[in-house]
Amino acid sequence: MTFKSKGLYLRHLIIERCGDWLVRHLAALWYRLDRRHRRITLANLEFAYGAGLSPAERERLARLVFCHFVRLAWEMMELLLAPPAFIRRKVIILGEEHMEAALAQGRGAVAIAAHAGNWEYTVMGYGLLVRPGVVVGRDLDQPWAARLARYLRERGGNYMVSKQKGMKGIMGHLRANRPVGIVIDQNTTTAGGLLVDFFGHPARTTPVAALLARRGVPVLPTLSRRLADGRHLMLILPPLPLIKTADAQADIRRHLELQSRVIEAWVRSCPEQWLWLHRRWKNQFPEIYEESGQRSAVSFQPKPGIKDRN
Image (cartoon, rainbow, N blue to C red; front, top):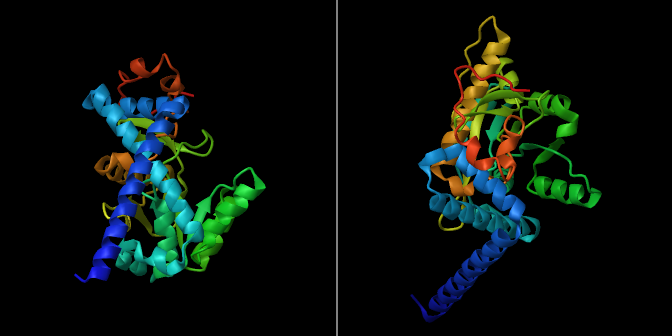
């Protein structure tokens, strides 16, 4: 190693360690001050894992979740300002052949995703490295924030479809044979979602991808994770199978349950990189997010056949 390369290495190491120190301390400050999201995160972890995690383990995991999202916030600045060549170097895509095979059918494809890793980073990387994709997202209420979010999602050559436009916008891109990304791990409205199992409890989930699967559109889990070296992995899995019968509703529910199991497995494999700050079970179990309800909620055991409590 030359003197110059040693100097560059040491400078990179110092910057990296200073960045890690800053992330840890900002996350600790956020965790201490943001009582609401701290309580939601701990309630979710208790509800999802029950006795499988001790209080000390839940506390440790919750702090790691806050660290992850502080790091993610910094990475959003990279996505807004860094040159495309820099972003390309930080994204690894595995399983690209599965998406290419799906698109070869000419019906487009749906990439189901989760709020795990830095999903925005890998989506931009996919647009820069492979082909333009489509992001389905909600337009933010503030006009300036909505414009910023759209710029972020379209900067790598991707397209954005507003959730408010719904199926019409999605179908237009599928007819153009593009991959359409739909995030399915957030709570949705009672009218707009079905109840499927997630961490042992019924959770309201969007059935859009399952509905499209029954129409013949390939649906591929497309999942993200931040790696130890700071790069971002996008893993594309083969299309999920759909058994088509005369009962359309049953077909859609079975497929949605399969989607949920895949997402849950990904979250369990690296729980500190998932959005535990979101009230995933608020439709069915609002009491777990009340200060007095966290402890009693863990004793709930779902009965065979998930039923709506509303």
